Image 1 (tube, one colour):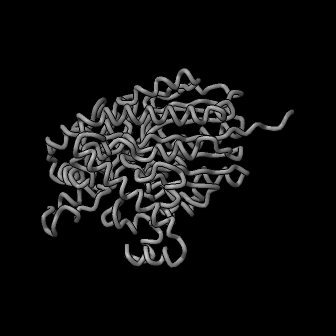
Image 2 (spheres, one colour):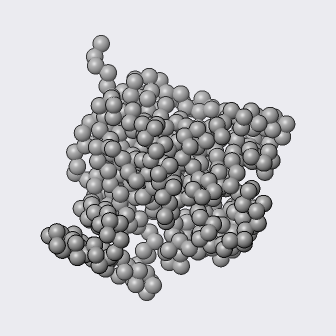
Image 3 (cartoon, one colour):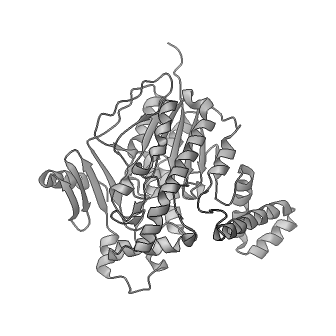
Length: 439
């Protein structure tokens, strides 16, 4: 027998892409990809979902999720430390597992949550492609500037230290990026340019083009073009954050924000799928030797049961695209269950690496929420939120999908929020699922 062939593994995540806005990915069929139906994200927002995709665990099992006092976004120190600690304990899931087997690993992300700061480090090479930078080298400069600013806690102090250390070129690079960003915003206000469209994929493409990667490799790529902001009115994210929290705590939808996002999201989703296809084409020379998975971590609600992403357990957030291209020597797996949870990704990878047949699908899958990932204090003063609303929002909630229908259940309060299908059967299945989850 010959030596076992070990495929490269490429996981391309199109952040915030709903399944019903992912039609542009149909072009993947021409490249040998297979589409799998009813893929369900394990969480309605980025970090828990990505951790589930690399560990194979649901959020309640891996522990990297939101809670009262544990948030994403600005000053998310507690969440950052929690994620680093849990990811380390879990050996970074399939990333650490394959590195132990001799794989190189590359984490190339436009989302700062998918970075070393949150436990996705210790890899062969990584890149955080902020929308400010357009080239790989610029992103490296940007990372170094951010570190310098955090260290000195002063723009002037950091600038003077860079000059003293002979790093004037780095300072000039930062000034160029800042100037370009302000010019783009000005051009946006004048209607000459839309600064909401490009969110890091150009730098990712620059990183990938013409670069030899050490094989076999695992590559995790995250692109953000389907993510907000969707309009110039929301460049700092405050408009959507307030509207999101109003929807969470008071069940009120800001119709202006809903309409703005509903009008703009399709254009951003289409742009994101085009960028994803470009990335696949740039990596075309590796495709025959690779297992390639193209998916999303969650969708975006556009007034259909909520707004934005996080907290809500609705189809617009949880139903995501899933396309797989198998190595040339492997037979594509058939879908055996009605649904595919993204927690199955590590088992798909292990099967491909071990030369085994993959099993895709299950008749029961779920998603979990533990509260809004945004800090309520950023919008509301103390006492503005009713205690009951806080208690209900920051609860362990699950949405369970089965062949008999779906249901959303608040585990902590023991309350069925939504049931669609066979009520008696769903009640039984959901309670069984909930009792089997870690708290």
